[in-house]
Length: 127
Image (cartoon, rainbow, N blue to C red; front, side):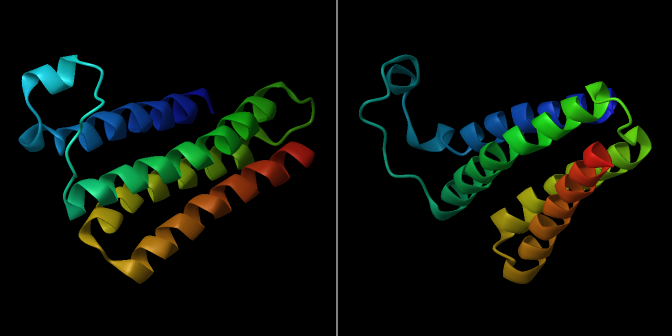
């Protein structure tokens, strides 16, 4: 379980920097090191990367809470929770390129799969 928690956190960190890469063509060095008060409009792909990151930020607290609970709650089914965590990770890994590519239905399926991973983890905790 700990491995999957760390993997999701690494994915989160990578997604932060990936989203920031799309900003580089639009800004100067002084804008990057400054207060970022006057940032330019970002393109369509950059906007998608930002929205995908926001979506992960919204889902991360639930995942982390369930992951930690699976480790500390007596009687929790850690194997089931680990499966749910791995499902969440791979679904979120697929979600980013699907979102950036603008593929609507597959993106939604990836989101639902990640949500299913959280449900599986929750069921493992209440076991």
